[in-house]
Length: 266
Image 1 (tube, one colour):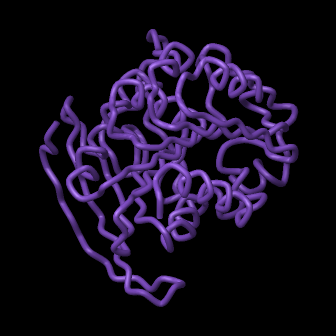
Image 2 (cartoon, one colour):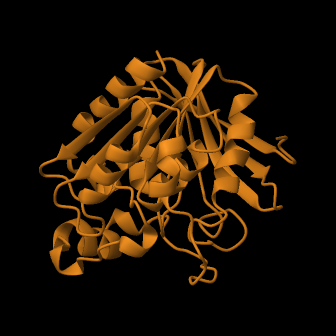
């Protein structure tokens, strides 16, 4: 595939390593003509890690920006907005067409990097699995809190931590970058459990034992069905998606780095 349009604005930043780094704001066009906004964190590495957020999130969310900065010492990083989120165009199609968004980002990244890793969170993980089943340019995948089937999501809202979710997302910095422009919900959606057997990229499934939205059994089912090089990590104190990172930033980054060291190199 070819990237139909790219708009870049470079912004110099300082990295913890003391090396010069740069963030570019880029827009790419999907095969169905949606504009996908991404931030490209550069520090001259030969491998890149793409972060794929979940429902109601965006690349501007504080936790995703912190993850990008934390990975930048060893990998360049791309964080993007799915359609219907952040600064990307269109309406969110509930995983039906979002593989096109990730593929447009892969088109862009593939022009520059030797290897591409992807970390997907929640519905972003489901989309990443569906995409990896059809696109061999994903060289390594980490699926965090992925559902095996959208229709089997648990919605155990009574288990939500008040401080972790409600207060953080309504009154604290968690509200930054949140929002969605939803499309029609009641469409037939691709099931990651049907796609995961066709994924060839080494895949790490990560799930929190205390996940209130998507029970850890989802990742266990995906792990059992996968035919690729694979591993499964159930975190005893972990909850949902990027909140695993919020609870233990250094530990979560260490898990991500270790997997990518094994499967992407450094």
